Amino acid sequence: MIVKRVNAGDAIEARAELLACCASRRWAARVVAGRPYADLDALRAMSAQVFEELAWADLLEAVSAHPRVGERPTGPEAGWSRQEQAAAASADDDVLARLRAGNAEYERRFGHVFLICATGLSAAEVLAALRERMGNDVDVEQEVVRAELRKIADLRLVKAAGGCPG
Image (cartoon, rainbow, N blue to C red; front, side):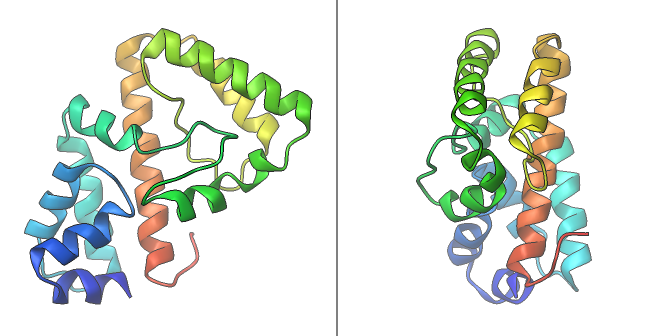
């Protein structure tokens, strides 16, 4: 269970455990600093609180660890990303081509990969969200990214605790 591992490990081990859920070093350090946690709900509450305090540079660090939707993930978050993007990975070639084109357009507009909590979403739903978010201004999109990262990290904390997302 992640709560026991975060509470019991030294700070370096605890940060490493958390960085697999979210690649923001500031987020991981702040969550580690809040130890010990009575339970998963307390850990999740601290995570959510820290997300509200993060600067854009911290969020961008986390975003940069995420693969483009529809691409093969690598790195410390790869296992999570493969599960989360399962629907996009199995989409037909036309949808995948539109996702790739949409990702490129999004990156040109906003300067980072398109990020969405894709768990439970079809590739068509991800593509629709991408198109809709292209209409956001930079400030609005940064807050959407913050919310999506928070959802992804929360889902990963629940999964790391052996639970099912609720």
